[in-house]
Length: 217
Image (cartoon, rainbow, N blue to C red; front, side, top):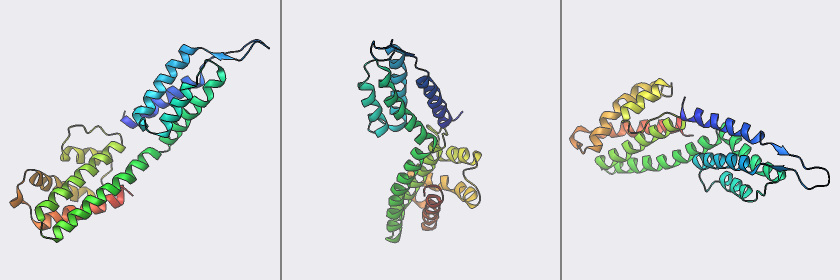
């Protein structure tokens, strides 16, 4: 099970738990309906942990949930606001909004790196251009793998490429061209400048540009 699938599963579990919080109905004329504070606290704590992990504590989802949680006084009408925020977060996650936003932001950042690499190559700074282009490519490959829930911690570029290929995320011309990139990347990161030609750097820059157009737009 991928990380994305695990997160979706946890959202579904907590959705069911939130909907199942029992309500104790007050007798007519004796006040408001209530819920068991322990049951609500247990659900809310798990929900806040998930929202923090997925969206971050500065996100509207987390802050709105925390606000609703802080207003809980044990009454049944305190529950729907928190549950509504949680379901909105689940809907955004299931709809892919989070990954779409991450992808768009990543594309802009990598585009800046590629532009800098192209300028350096044009100015005859082959080695600088190689480092910038290879760094952009490696990070872009990692980001793509992460958005697909692939576990790539501590893996080298070749392993990341193989993982993406196995999921069908690199295909066609990309699949064959990317195989030469680890050699150029390793030479650049180990300052083996005589092993890198301007043509090598140009191929990395061109590949990254195409990669960003197809995967990060």
